[in-house]
Amino acid sequence: MRLVLPMPVKASTCHKSVEANHDRIALTRGPLLLCAEGVDNGGAVQRFFVDPERAVAGAEVETHKEGVLKGLPKISVPASELTTSDVNADATLNLIPYFAWSNRDRSSMITWIGTKRELARLSYELDLKFADAKASHTFDNDTVNAIRMKHTPKSSKDTNIRRWTSWPQRGKPQWVEIDLGDAKKITSVGIYWYNDDGGVQLPASWHIETLKDDKWQKLAIYNTDSYSCLPDGYNTVQPADPLKTARFRIVMQPQHDRTCVGILSVDVETK
Image 1 (cartoon, rainbow, N blue to C red):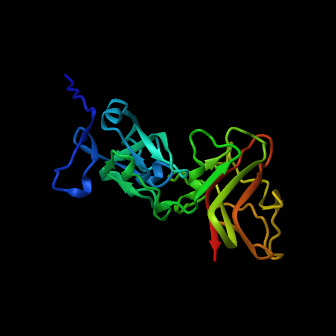
Image 2: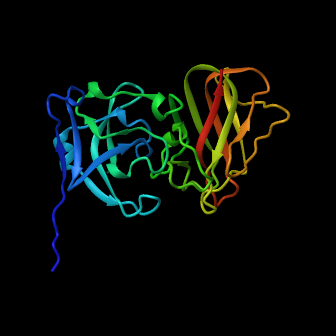
Image 3: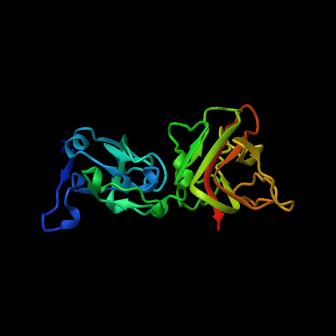
């Protein structure tokens, strides 16, 4: 005989005496309190808010297939997201059991989730380095926001943190554009490549481009630097001349027509 108990996702409210949790809910499943981490949600989780009934009705339960959370449940609920353009967007909020948080990388975390737009906020100080990022193409299971996150890759094959890849566009040149928000004096840029030794590998070449007269032009770098494509560390270059800009592009060429490119992290030093 086997006993099977239903464990639907439920929403709980806090006692009204706790003012900090007014208009917030905690999501649970059976005995487990759930939380949302930035590492699963492309950045600061404080930007999300939910409708309790919609979140509970639309909850989906899966199981982590790999990594340190292998075997643990992964719950996704429909949510709304405050974007950089200050508008609401439909989104999915991914959650894990609260006891398992902080086992992968640095990121924000919440258990009490806002139910009103007024409680959502964008906070680049928490775990996002840059105001925005976009790419020529992003694989559906990856996110260009990985480039903005303050995580620390353990190697170029690190699968415990988010990444950006151009899979499955084999052999096609790609670019990633970084928006710093305001014009800043850039002293160096470092790229930490993702490499799975399969469809996504180190690029054959890359360079940085900046806007000049409304056209993207290759950045000249120190004569002692090079646009290197080495694994397991940041490939860092410095501008040959003083550079002040709010936006720049990383342009990449795959090794051959059977591979794509990927990035785990970008570091930008500014003054």
